[in-house]
Amino acid sequence: MPQNKNLTPVKLPMELKFGQEPKTKFYNNLNHLKVELIDAPTRSQALNVAWQYVKATWADHHDHTNPGTASLQELSANLEDVLNFRALPTPMECLGFAFKLSGLSFQEVTHIIRHRAGSFAAQCTGDRDLRDDPAVIPEAIENSPGFLHRYRKLVRESKQLYADMCDSKDISMMDARMILPKCMTSFYLMRLNLKDLLGFIAQRQDMQIQPATDNLLAAYMAREVLKVLPEASTRINFNKPDMHYIKTFRVPDGKGGETSRGTNLYWPEPKNDKFDYHPNDTIYQSRREDINGTENPGTKTIFTQLWEETLNEIEGIQLAYAQFMGRK
Image: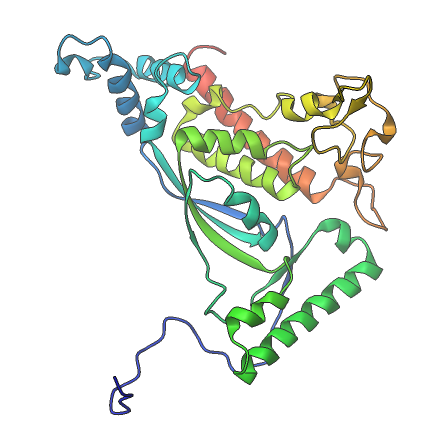
């Protein structure tokens, strides 16, 4: 069909920024991270689904699966059994949780979408002009003035080159975006059923092999789940050892020696310090939070502060639930 200039151009869903100078705000990568629960079952719905699914197995009649006069404690105990695989775990697959994850760097995105059971929606990078998008900086780089200056300079220069290529209209946004650094931020919508969500939390809370941002995402998501379903406090445990790290740190190599089958970045955290190791078994001869820049202030890191605050909230929910169930 021929072009028809008598038509009114459609209204594009994105803002065009051709010719505008790029703007860049920098944020600490951990302080900028946010988790919002945007959809979830109510506690009542979850308790009802778990009860009906579990009772259906031995019910003589379909009416016999209804909660009826079951007490809240009985319903909660049943859901605990489901969560901890003492009963049919299928009800967990019926309960969906949707989150908005914002302040993510492009690096975190690669970790999130590895969880193939999730459903995702993403902030677009292909036909949305990214010249004004913010960037994030890890605390260790913030504590390293020489590196920090170079870091900011490279981010600004890469964004300027991106804008120049877009403005030329000889290079599309699709191609120009290849110059942008991983510290640029985005947001994702992520939906998981409860079974896979608990798996996500268990995997990403591992401080030995997962980055600090993943750890905080796991803690923030756990906190939101517990606000809805305090019964999950019997399943979620941030104090347990990270067994994948422990089991893969030193393993027989089949030749009479030992090798690593895991990610030996740092010395074990106190909860994981359960085996003999050589100080040079790791890439860095320290624990993760000890590596905090060329001018390390020696105080609690931002991660430690946020981690402790969040875990204190989680422990408060766990205690209140234990008291409700008569265990404290």
